[in-house]
Length: 143
Image (cartoon, rainbow, N blue to C red; front, side):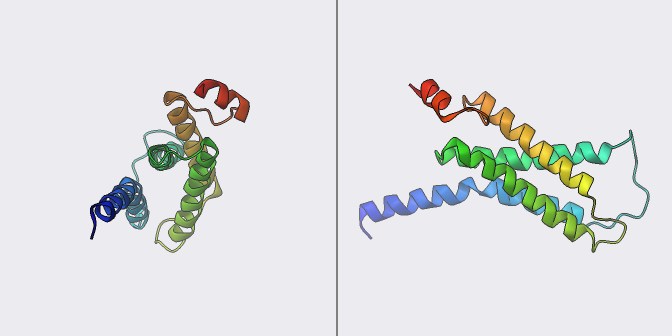
């Protein structure tokens, strides 16, 4: 293996490691949502489960955005981060329909989407991008 091959391999390895937090977070989401509920859930306030969904999928969106940002992908790809988060949320809601004491709820999916959108937008705002900027405005900021 030549030196340039080794360098390329380590670069690929770095790309794989970027995805590790995303994979681990998704594994945590599916693990927690697979735990049956026995009806003894402590409710501190109304709709607390929706707030949990906002943060849960907001963090997923943020981790995806961080990975996309590190890879230097165009800003429009951040919409894919939001879409991927919502897709994971939909699969998780379907998964929960098979878990005793849990059910599928489209309100949860809405909270997932809102969390992903909010956190990705905040990530872009803090890193000089803009989810809703036009291509001309982005080009102006980069020059």
